Image (cartoon, rainbow, N blue to C red; front, top):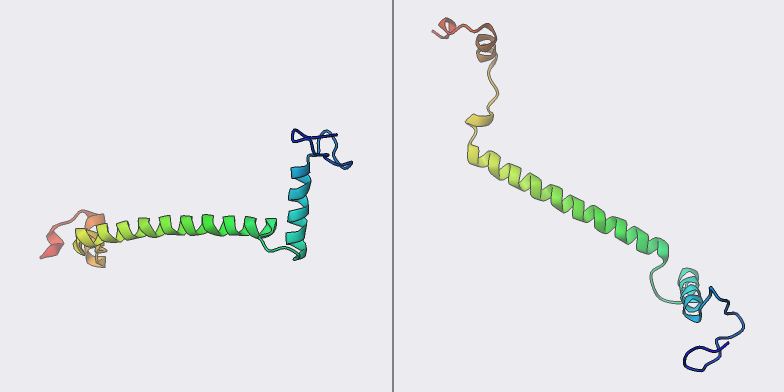
Length: 99
């Protein structure tokens, strides 16, 4: 069987197997065995997962940075917890205990 360039594809080529596919498989097998420089499939998958994690952490940091800036701009009074006395007054609805 010959390809468009007139070269013989070889006897290993079936209808579903093209020379380029076979070359890619051989290159990948050589990478996994250490015969060829390059990244294995497992390493590539791990790199993608780590890049995704870095992207998510950067987004989380940006959200925290904005929340921190907002908190600082509102000042300490906006987020001050009520004292025990103020909580009791609020719960009982009595203003005459303030004096």
